[in-house]
Amino acid sequence: MALLMAARREEHVVGKYKITILYDDQGRAIGAFIEGGRLARPLYIAAKEPASVKLPKPVLRFLAKHGFNVKA
Image 1 (cartoon, rainbow, N blue to C red):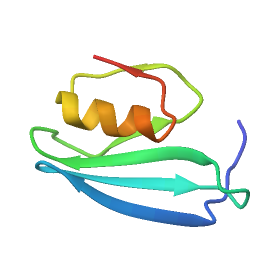
Image 2 (image 1 turned 90 degrees about the horizontal axis):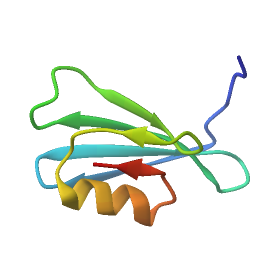
Image 3 (image 1 turned 180 degrees about the horizontal axis):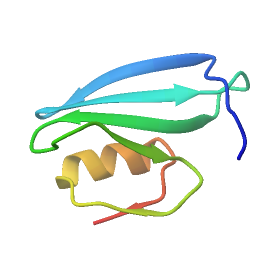
């Protein structure tokens, strides 16, 4: 298990969801926390791992635009 240090974070709101994208010191996205909407607890998605989650299309498009490998 590798421990990553987030150098920078950005918070965005897409619909009813708050998305916090974490970046490393080289400016690459390493993960995202998704909160709100119909989620019972915050969801973490790693940027490099393929993820299959049930989220609204605008949220999936936003994550894909920032380099995440997500499917509906």
